[in-house]
Image (cartoon, rainbow, N blue to C red; front, side):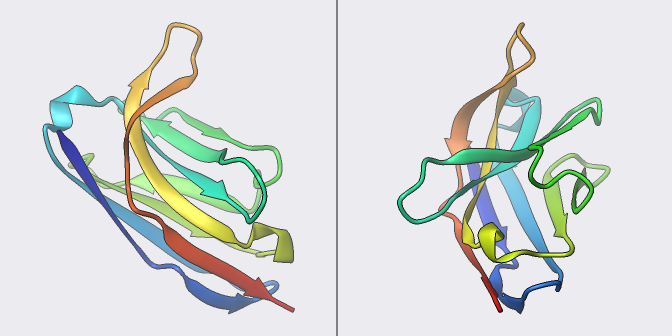
Length: 121
């Protein structure tokens, strides 16, 4: 099993910044990709960004150029730097971990509990 613990959510004004962190522990060898998903009220959960063990990254179009995903050298902690936040970025952000598929998509096997990000006007 892999355990994921998120931190760093909160309330921020539009145009501001937040950084989320996610620490992974347990059977890290079971995963080769970590990422962030988000779910706004009444909407489906969607991919925000992911990063592979080879540091290859992928972003949703809505956050490209504003958000940056990175990880520490030990590859056990992943960060999401969120700049120029918009009202529509308000959501619960979930850390996720799993395997990359042959079609280059992320198969999520583990989820964190989520952290709330609220952007106010």
